[in-house]
Length: 230
Image (tube, rainbow, N blue to C red):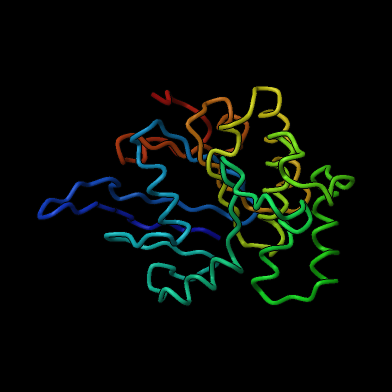
């Protein structure tokens, strides 16, 4: 599903290179739910951007569904992201003047799919995330946890190969954080969705079956939790 192979990355500033990631190598199988754990400065955000095709690596390869995304043109990569990758953001990234249903439908609008088909898929997903009765409300009328549920439904609307969740509980209180992770686990188990959850929170990471931990740009753990996030 996802293969990160000998991935390294540096940022250039003038004539100087600053290494950020060093020979990262791991695989994620279809249907897995993993956590990418690391404190600030560990390189996890850079790794996320590379895996999502938002940046090109200095060296190494990233394969999603067997396709090397670092070799794609910008136009091909943009199309690939629309059809193969879902995103869940810490700040939800909902459009305030669109209803809940319209926000979830939006990726299908970009794909040119018909209105009736879009609505049916959006309504089905909103029901799955517990918002079946709030489809015509606006984001401002929802709590933070409910807005994140909308974001989760939107991430699934294109039936992506993989969903990247970037600090999905970062803006939520402890109770709501648990509810959102419970929902992601349920979707992973019932729909077979592949999730990569990027987090600095140990309690979030420990809820997944597998933890990949970064420290100072190096992969230091891959497996069941066995370390310190600091």
